[in-house]
Image 1 (cartoon, rainbow, N blue to C red):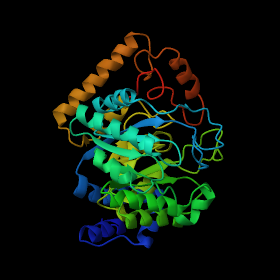
Image 2: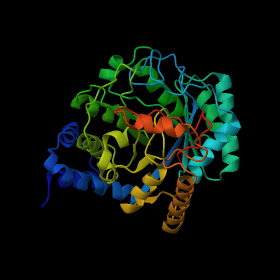
Image 3: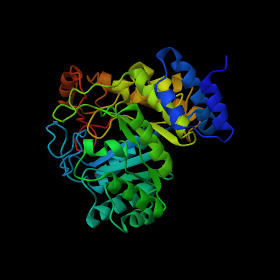
Image 4: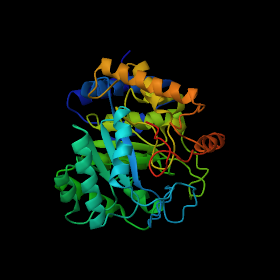
Amino acid sequence: MTTSFDQLADRILSGGAATVDDALAALRTPDEQLMSAVAAAGRLRREHFGNTVKVNYLVNLKSGLCPENCNYCSQALGSQAPVLKYSWLTKDETLEQAGAGLRGGATRVCMVSSGRGPSERDIDKVVEMTSALKDEHEGVEVCACLGLLKDGQAERLKAAGVDAYNHNINTAESNHDNIVQTHSYDDRIDTIGKAKEAGLSPCSGLIAGLGESDEQLVEALFALKELDADSIPVNFLMPFDGTPYENTWELSPTRCVKILTMARFVCPDKEIRIAAGREMHLRSLQATALQVANSIFLGDYLTSEGQDALADLEMLRDNGFVILGMDASAFDELIEEHRARAAGRVASGCGSSCGDGCGDACGDHREQDEQDGPVIRRRGAGTDVAANA
């Protein structure tokens, strides 16, 4: 039976575009019709991306200590969330963390720093890190996310080999001042413009679950379409204790799938990345969401833990997906390597995904798993514990 969503997919595949009303209809899909919407949006995903999934890996270069008051952020000014706080990683530490993600299956490394924006010395550090990373790992993509850019900084990053720049708009312009007051929506748009003008691939997305209306979610998606963002990370609010959004639970798994489905209809040929909060909010619908999205982060996030990296990879293969740039045989070998490492950890007495040499971190992990909110990252960058990769 042909559905209205099939007709929408036909129109888009024929060169048309989704309207605001189409986007609202996708967002307001009755649960009993959700799979029809997913199937139709999945046609667009397969047309542009087949069964591939782009795997990205985050390296938090500097954690916490941010002067901006983004109310949703565990690293922001005023946040009491007990996240890791440390200054810049060294070049060697960055290479170690990025290498773990690349060996784990990622093809893009996203290097992130907290703060309003980089100084020239900060740019020097990222330039050095990028050069070393490109020398050591042929073909690796590098995305930088360093905050608001000043004139000339994007050009320096591009010259050093940085491929993309991430700066999320986070929410609709009409909702922006409700979630942050220390910088404006226009400040964010300006930085995305600087990145594009320098030849960096623009990466910009949103956070759902911030009290926005359906209309504001649609407004944000059409703004991202207008910006022509090549990749669109869709984050789902992680309500850290100690932030203004603690105990804010507006999202259900089906709501999250509808948001991603809407994103695919509005931006059919763009990379739609399921980003922070996917494990917490999508839960058993993560694989369903990948029928419309085509990109994920492997392992952990900036300040919170994600699901075990092996579980991520097995989820992809179990549902018929392959990692972009990797053939099926290499993917099978990668999973077997992960399994062997996991077996070694169990044999050494660590049954969690904490990594080799986890020591006391395992106890922290078990204690925090019993909480309802995000599990604070205590491994990987800024620690002596192996990364979840």
